[in-house]
Each structure stands twice: as structure tokens, then as C-alpha cells.
Image 1 (spheres, rainbow, N blue to C red):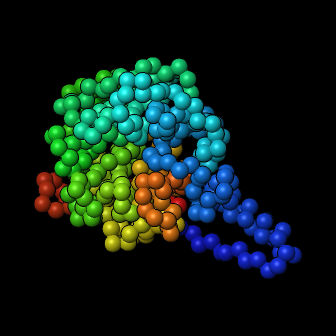
Image 2: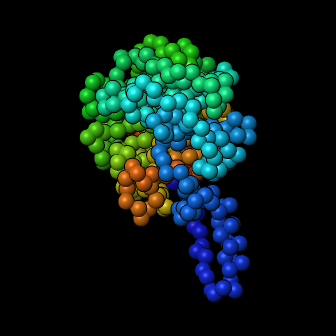
Image 3: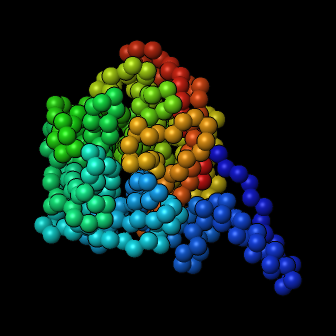
Length: 366
């Protein structure tokens, strides 16, 4: 996590007011502060008090989805910062009383918009999908995805890699809440899983077991690096704690996505607020606690449009402002950026295959 220092604005009587306003405007433009409502005091903080952002860009329009009012809403705006002020259009309502609606994810596939979300109560949570030709209206009724093994499932999304559609989600191995793992399944189309489910990550490293019962790997998001390798960036540690953070799974060059030992895990958090759990060379956040459940803001939500090395690209994530009690109710959507960080070695021990893998990792910016 890299940040830049920002000089404070100092008032020296009323005569300095124009200079103060100018500096404040420059800070807003530089950091992406939201100008909505009371005016958040944290870099990148929007006025949207919510969790689990999912944002894509279609042409010049940014589209987000959110769990709200017992269903799913869509917002559209000209920039990620403007999404919080955009009207929330209800596109699906839980008319069947399925239960809690969590973490909708939006993508495009074949010219249609697909929104995946989890619904249920307790152990009944399963993945559902709706779709439409338009981003903010005309969605179908919900359809439960027949994921392999039929177990508890949340935070799912679709992506295409090397011509194959995949579904990635967080789930339980069995029927009890011991730990949440990251799973993959092939998809024959955006609504139809095929074959087995494959575990690609379990929360077994010490830095992702700081907070547990259960131990957590969740919120997986796919992206492709400049070498063409697949990454799944996920949230570790409990979302109820400021130990929540983002970590990375990198598929080795030419690796099989279904083979767990072809995945290499970052040696610590890449985006988090506690130095003790950060990967060496990555610094903790300055302005927020417990950053997690992020969204790479990709064109059409397609990992084939993943950014090249060098420039920073848009990111959204949820977190709690430093100085505020850490709780689910105090989470906000934040805008940030990310870039690829080359020549990064991930190390492991006591597993099949090579113990190191070197390639791209990711730096996150508040």
C-alpha cells in the first residue's frame, strides 16, 4: 500500500480564505474526496455508507451494484467518485423472502448484464443470478446457480480466462461454518456450472488467521496481469475486525486453474491496516482500517481489459475511517487506485512443486 503525504491547510484569519478554498479544491481533485453530503474527511471516502462495492465501466459510464432495500440496486455515473450521488435504481427485490442479500457483482457477457448475488439465512446462503440487456432495468427473475456440491456460497462472480468461463466464490467445504475457502468451477454459459468445484485457497497462513472462528477467505476478484497470468485477489480475516485485508493468489505461468498447487499466495496482506500482517515491502494504510471486498474497475468487467504495467487504474473498496469504531455499520465505499508491481516473489513451504514463483503483484493506493 503506497500513499502520498499531503500538507495540511492552515488558516490565518479571514484574508487567507480564498487560498484555503483553492487548496481544498486541489485536494479534492487530487485524492478523489467525495463532495456529497457532509463531506467525508478521509482520502477517497465517498458519502456512501455501505459495503461490498462492485463497479464496471461501459464506455464512459461507471455502473455499480449494491445490496439495498431487500434487493439489488444499480447506480450509473460519469466517474467512480460520482456513483455515491447517483440515484439508486432497484433492479431486483426479494419477493420470495429468500433472506439476507449479500455482495452483488455485475459483469457483462455476450452483450447482456449479469448480476450475481448471495441470498439466504445462515447456512442457507446460495448464489443467484439475474440478467438483462440494460444495466438498470428489465432484469429476469432470480435463478439459483447449481454450483457443484451445493454447499453454502457467497461473493461469487464470473470471468473468462483463456477462452473458458469460470465462476469463483467463497464457500464451505461441508455443512458447518469452520472456514471459508475460495472455489472455482467451470461454466458452460453465464448461468450453468459444469463439472466439479475446485478449492484454490484456504485460510491456513498465520497472517490470515489473526481473526477467526471461522477463518476467512472471501470476496474473490479475478484480474489478469501484463504477463497474461491469472490473479484472484481476495479478503482475509474476519470482516468484523480491522484485521480485514486484501491478499493475492497468482496462477503460475501455464498453470492449471483447477490445481491448487499451481496457485501461489502472497506472503501477507497487500492492502491492510496492520503492519504485522503486511507482506514485506507493502505498507499499511494511513487513512482507513480494515480495507476489503474491492472491485477492480475494468472495462465491461472483463479481465481481458485488465490494465498494463505502469499506470494506476481505478479501484473501489470498503473500509472504516481511522478514528472511527470498527463495525459493519461504519463501512464506506472508497475510491482508490492500483498498479502492477513486477518481479515479486511469493514463497511457500511443505507443498508439491517449486517453493517460489516470481511475477507481478499489485500495489494499492488509498
